[in-house]
Length: 249
Image (cartoon, rainbow, N blue to C red):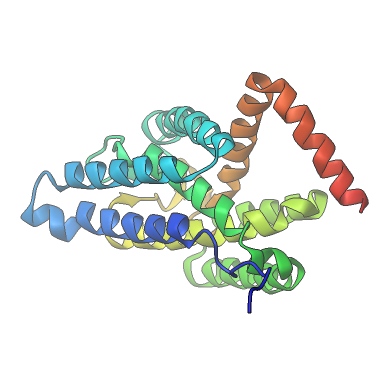
């Protein structure tokens, strides 16, 4: 019999390839493969670039624009935090091409994951489960790895959740996505975080990786939306009106 029900997972063709390609790319750029193939990072760059082009073709016109803005923001952020401030450093002490591309892919993947019908139907329950999971992870990292920096970042994330409850689902998923990537990237030695904040503030110890570094994705998201708002004023006003009407229902 025909049904009007939507499939529970409509966008898996977007976020599942991102998860796989980023893992594979980090593995290839890792210490073991690079010892066998000195220029393996270029292979990762090409692989992630292909994934970016594939994802770009799959997403909506709005997300295409957000991805373009995200490339600019992530590149500038990486230059500032990694190359200038030394907040973390990459294996070759450079800025790999795949990193800004990867940031933007993560953003698009989470954007579409939270749009899944199954996720939207269960937003409240999922958020209730993820909230304590995030706290437990940060506390564990604090106790086992003296991760003061990551714990403070996580507390900032939870504070933003309280002030902006409509962001909880998106950034809870983002938090765990960044945990996934940071654990893989540091395990394969693609990058490393110093033992203290910026390797200079000795009274703020940090783990490798810090637990709550997804805090910086709030700035990434805010930057993408700022560009979108400034460059697409009419569309932005329509979007805000629709959201206000939805919240009133």
